[in-house]
Length: 470
Length: 118
Image (cartoon, rainbow over all chains, first blue to last red; front, side, top):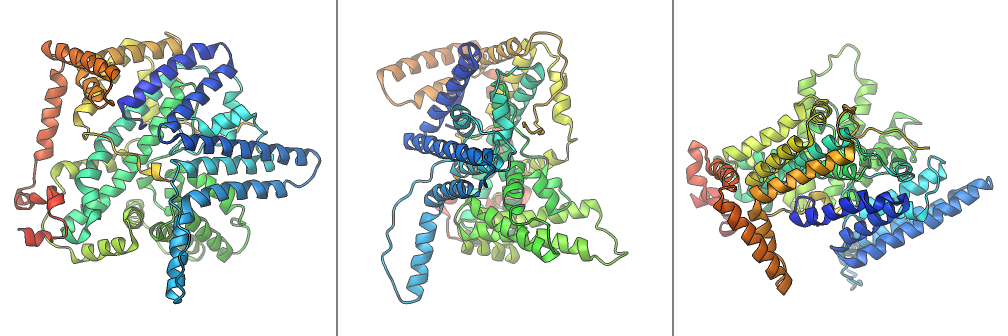
């Protein structure tokens, strides 16, 4: 069930009404309604996944209780923490990396002249598994670090199952949401205005910009780069940068907006990433909940910057390589992670050893340079295979003349996608503050007008969000 | 132990007027009504996509009835006009793009360099 569909609207409106009517009787009932709704939402993909979600929550809840009990006795949390993290990684590894592992091992064995039929099992990847397993791990680590109190089973299951963030984030931590579950939330006009703007804005970015670019340009150029002109390949690379931003940030915007209508606050996940003047800055703006997760639970656990500059570079590289693998078991994701890790390390080395008196790069040039490094990374990220990515660069270098796919509208949409990044950062809160003062029927009319406009422009049908596959 | 975090919905709005819940109910109710009247064809298209059954047939009859009535009143006009303009924008091509337009239907051209298609 995708957010920008009538199916989802027909699911969401009764849930919203139930939560704000029957759910007002008691906070526990409110949470139970939300939990059941979340399971229905997830079960639409496959009911077996709901069992996995409940099992994952039960494992994390019981292990957190044991960690807390050990801490209460002044004992080390490590044994149970290690078991809990291993259990989460085992779930993730089985569903996400088993096929890749078997294929690669079979290839290595064949290369050694020792071909063996390895057991191949068709493992179906549960939607959003990377998100809820990371959520489970961060919960256990937070409990072990005494950063959060153990949650009740209901709260933890709801935290991991809550449908607005379930399949594509943001990665909402226990410390973000569990305290909000403690009492019935209060809805303000500011939240309503922000939510309506975020949902409509997300709808526009996903159904108009991302879908149009995907179907009319990006999918075609990446399917067969050798059949494309240089300008189309260039537009395809920029187009994918805009598509993935508009697709993923649209999901986050709608998730934040939907949660707000239910009375809950989610953290910010994007902040104009393509206006970053360094790659470190980029990761403070792109998929913020994942980059914070990697920083807090992986980079710092590896030692962070507590050591020599080479130790820090090693940690950055490991973090980004694993960040790449988080997206999936593919060499292209690994190279994408290596590129980001390598450039992050180079930035640190340059900051350390930049010759005194050398001028710094003007900000617009730095933004342009970082954007193009990110675009190079996206080509690896988007390509189905490593050979496909390399072919993209070869064909781009050959730069066959002419233009076939990149129509004025598509170029315009790429321009819109980029221009979004250079609007004032306080535009949304300023708009929301103003819109919150409008009479409700006027805001309703304006929202309907915006949806009508988007519906007239949107591509027929809605493709799944890119991050659903992760 | 709750951590403070930045959320896009943290907006200090004017507290005057209806409380948030009543405000939301009227906003969504108005929007739904307007969309039902101005975009009823979307409901009809959704109903057509339902799995065939006696109930889905009833839903489809109702949805198409609403779509026909709103169309008869001209309420679908604004959306249709907007769509027509957007479709025109989609058909726009650069001056030197005309000869290379064919690959838009890439399904029939795969594996063949564009230069060879010209």
